[in-house]
Length: 253
Image (cartoon, rainbow, N blue to C red; front, side, top):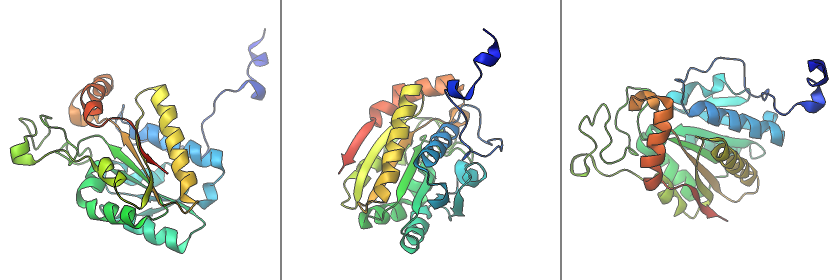
């Protein structure tokens, strides 16, 4: 059999989604952001909503998200993505509006905005990347940094008596009446990627049903901040983050 008999459109099992631009990602090798960008882009393509989707990019490692997904974007001030998404969705109720935020952006300076947007039940999607560290600015302690975790600002490990406790922001969000779907996923292997993609699609579908806010946390890694290889970063995440940040749906109504 000639190879040309195999390379045919009907035999194709995968192709890159056109929603992803050809720009080279600026993320460190092994970073979880690239995987999440990919599955968000695939969901937008599969739902056929490219012309109806508006993303709100944050301040943080994913501040340049608009360089990679070929959809409409707006840039928010640090932590204010949910406030900007609120206005965008209310002015454009026929659009799919989502924020894409890290733990430093959402759970620290943006804690007030995310709490009140979810409490109001804004019909938006929130994609929350939790890698337990400030990745862009040098690996400092974030609100989600684990006890004992070494960072640039906790060189001897996070201590509760000095630095407080890690914030389980998604568990808090699940208690708010305005949220309809709250889940925690990951993307460290193919099975996890499929589950995360399914959750993100469900969140997008919910946003047009006037059910309230859908909140998808993705537990990720920052191997540059952890000072380990990508493989070891995933292992560390599974051994340390998953026990404290267990995966699965917390709310679905």
